[in-house]
Image (cartoon, rainbow, N blue to C red):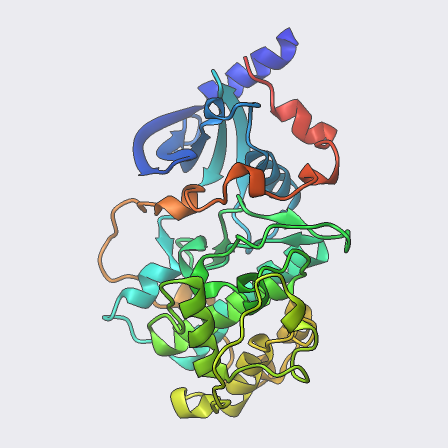
Length: 354
């Protein structure tokens, strides 16, 4: 135990916390640097002491998944250390996200640029799904951009394993504008389709430069989905009327995507339509999306270091509350059982509070 405590203190001493750049209910984020190299890093301090039974399970999951998911399109977890009753995650520092780029109207997007961002996002999602992990909070400001233009999935606080088809999970995940219809109708058993739906909404947002379906409430979100894609039928989505929060919605005719996305190619519209199917079992998987005709046709994806970047130097990324766990459901509604068993020994060694 003493050796572990000394190791923890050594890790803690190797990083500095320079200033706070984000604050939320469950975590604070600091800009810092690695003392030995001067490399900028971000330290996410999770406030474990506020939970009656210790560290919140979502924090353990985030550490577990970031330790296991090593991929060029997933944010890198550099270290973990404890301080008093808090758990600190040391992450690579990325101060730009896809939302900032979408909102910067001085930037012009070419089809090849959108294809590049989609390629990197889907590669990250595919890696997660091949390792039986759902992200469950994909949205533009959780897609961070490195200085060399590489997109990385971040904020795994709501991530969950989904290898067990019998496991019941909460439907209160994913920010509403990117939340799949099965979640809006209270599904407790679901698969990678929830991430694909969110990615499809991000695809549409890249094409439009504004959020595709921005509802104020869950009911409003469902109505916007139906207005955009038509009201689902039983043939189109078998069994959806049996979902816990199913509500009958006014009939809306199916809209043709090319009417809104007039500048998009047929290959673009085909992939978008496959990602936004009502029936989650009919949605394209990340793996199949990567081999779709969309990525096989010209133009080729823009190399990451040639992608549009904000024209002015940005201040350190001020993380929104939801990126820090502010939008987590009440604790009693979080998924159960936790982690489908005890944390791995690798995680347990890291979670030493001294």
